[in-house]
Image (cartoon, rainbow, N blue to C red; front, top):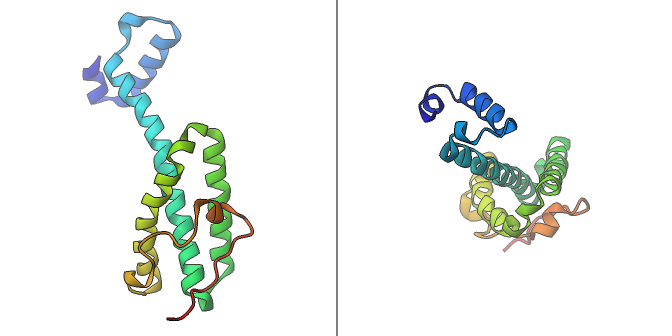
Length: 148
């Protein structure tokens, strides 16, 4: 059965779903089924990471390039906030990794914000300048940092 998994994942998945529905344990490719189920969970965490990255990048751009603020940026922030809330609502098991995923995604957001703003990466703080709660708050819009 794992041979089919390696050659045609689509057909393998359909046959495994059928075997599960029929409760035919002897037809189940247990190791690959377990890996695929784990990957479903990882994909949800990956979606959370990706959405936090986009949200944080736009919040950084909002704060560090106030003269460039646009409806597009604010729409992206709103969209990502809603999408993150939906992912968490549909996957409450992600709650324990929320802070870690947020912090990990900030590194990516910082790099992308630097690339999109043409500001040096060092212009942005090494750690998130706002909390998970602030970033998710529909009324939170970061102000430009004070000039040093």
